[in-house]
Amino acid sequence: MRILVLGGDGYLGWPVALHLSGRGHEVGVVDNFARRQYDFEMGVDSLVPITHLQHRVRVWEEVSGLRVATYVGDLTDAPFVHRTIKEFHPDAVVHFAEQRSAPYSMIDQNHAVYTQVNNVVGTLNLLYAIADVDPSIHLVKLGTMGEYGTPNIDIEEGFIEITHRGRTDLLPYPKQPGSFYHLSKVHDSHNIMFACRIWGLRSTDLNQGIVYGQETPETVLHPDLATRFDYDGVFGTVLNRFCVQAVIGHPLTVYGKGGQTRGMLDIRDTLACVELACNNAPEPGEYRVFNQFTESFSVQQLAEMVVDAYPGNAEVVHLEDPRVEKEEHYYRAAHTKLLDLGLVPHLLSTRTLSALLSVVDRHRDRVDLTAIQPTVKWRSTASALPTSGGVLETEPSDA
Ligand code: NAD
Ligand code: USQ
Image 1 (tube, rainbow, N blue to C red):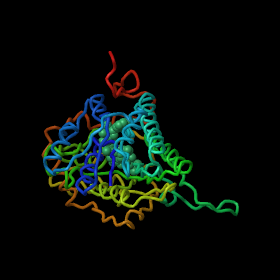
Image 2 (cartoon, rainbow, N blue to C red):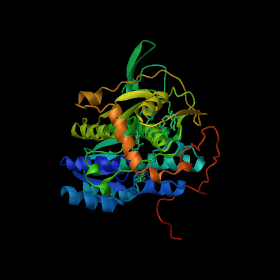
Image 3 (cartoon, rainbow, N blue to C red):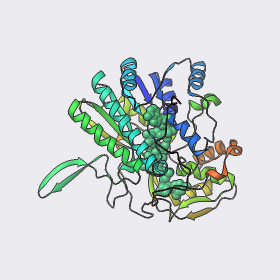
Image 4 (spheres, rainbow, N blue to C red):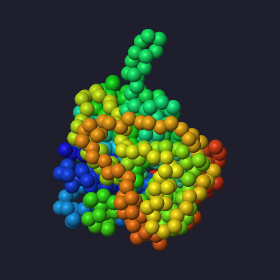
């Protein structure tokens, strides 16, 4: 298949692009390097050094003999999106290209507005381009498990059958997201479902859980093929952060009681899930949702697993939760659709954690201690962080 990976310079987009290329698909990547810009803005960096996209693509060609087409541009630029879809003419578009940090979206009004404009407008431009160029192109969109929030009932895969006053319907599952970022994904989901209904597009919304890990079979082929690894208080995700904290001897920062429970998956399963979705396209007009995670854990359980797997001494500290979220709650979410398509999960084991801890150990000298503490508080509308005066610029200005 011809597959265009949007956000192909990111943590997940890059290894997914390599995986799909290695599996024989014709792959193109699109990125505007916004993620590298957030690093400059926050004064942080990936723990594992990453090379420029153009260099990584050249190294991949040397290592594998396979070409990956590169498009540099911004999804909020409608003519760019239209041109790229028309020129590459993919069978499937895998859309990772969004601002993906909940804390970043909660820094202040500018960052909330930036996140929602970037994510919602980018996806809308993509929907229009697909509808205009070729409605049969399959949109594989990265959503998030956080769209559902933490209701006191079982979470279904996208839809729930409701009987109300004697009548029954299959309706979108209620959404109660926990940040302006997670809300942007809800807005996307509604727009995509609507576009499928009115224009006959086909789409798979992958409601992904929290990803952990750094190495994939393709990225380990050469050091210059590494993907990024974030551990800071804004972009670092929980298990990746706990591994870094253990290695540098910082107490593991459990927010609040630690009963917050989330769906999780290994980065290698992200690659497999995306390929399964691409290989099994929905019917024209169909909007479907897969819950893309393999296991769920509470934050406290994750911390204890890291403490047990780390060969040295590691301890846990409970910080006041900077977020507004339930610190103890019921959590049971369906996730059978990808398993039915053949997903064989890599479950979280001591072996997986040891491999991740050794990646961190190799780069421990690069850890910036000042980046560990959480700095963004949900309840405050102004943040302690130095913020830019306006919406983040992703393209050089004339000045
Ligand atoms: P990332 O920030 O590392 O990658 C996203 C990429 O998209 C970056 O390279 C960025 O430069 C690019 N991008 C952002 N806005 C763009 C725009 N307007 N035009 C062009 N490129 C743009 O994030 P990631 O961790 O790889 O996540 C990828 C996707 O998966 C996101 O949509 C995220 O919401 C979703 N997701 C991630 C996780 C996780 O744990 N990392 C979990 C669930 C869902
Ligand atoms: N947490 C801690 N200590 C930490 C960091 C986080 O206790 O040091 C807690 C948070 O309070 C939260 C949970 O861990 O309860 C998860 O936080 P996270 O930062 O790992 O994940 P989240 O903000 O939900 O976002 C991440 C990705 C996002 C993706 C989402 C999937 O950044 O792109 O959409 O995971 S999900 O959680 O399923 O919505």
